[in-house]
Length: 350
Ligand SMILES: [Zn+2]
Ligand SMILES: [Zn+2]
Image (cartoon, rainbow, N blue to C red):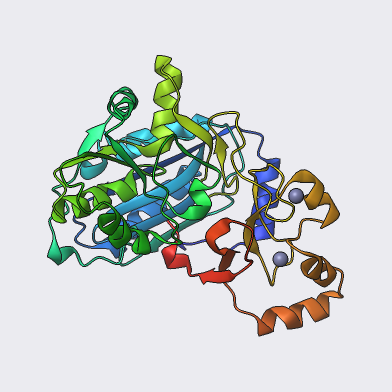
């Protein structure tokens, strides 16, 4: 039987990709759909996407599919044909990344999950299909020109820290799960105002807008296709850009620039900077923002302590790693003052 997952080591995969000179397109798509047998669908996808040389991360659940992938440009049409051959994905929008970056993924991973986005909600309690009104970039600009309109960023603090829409409320949360009840609470008394929500690719707002309507908000809107699609539309149609800074994305790039402004600061020295890195000390691996000069001084680490660790013999480093947690860590609150680390399990990422 054919092996339906990657058996090759990450390092070798990176090498293999380096020798492939073809340009790749990075894209994402999602669809809420009632899947009878996610496991079967997962294997079916793997078989075909591997053949199309697709790389990336895909979650499949009873509630649908959420994919962040890259494909060689000469296989892009083939991929579209394949997706269109699946009834519920026919004509579904593909969010193509703004910045061309060939090496955003190194392998193909398709996982069956409880949810395609970890939202902490039990869907029986409300109608997820009763979602907010979709807005195009042009409609978004028009509606947000009205000072009465409330704009809410539905992403986490480390995402909005490097880029967000002008005048948006930026909840200080680590996860989407935390954000939902907080936003409904925050906007109490504004049930009749126009509310516009946005996120990276639109998927979180599909649920969040339904949640807000369930909580009594009557004029809920969502930016269709999220920041990624907004950036594409303002370029294609020559519209004014209301997004400042970078759009944080969950692949090797960790962000794509939408406007030239740098709105964040280096977590080490406080100078303007908006590039995220993972600390080079693998037992730390914290996600943080670092400027070029600190990056050079600390050799890609987040602190002197971590820099000391990477100069230890490999054996000692391994021992340290064994003692510490694994997982993704990032600066809590992302403001650089208190360096409190928190662990984020993989299921909490997008
Ligand atoms: Zn710095
Ligand atoms: Zn570190």
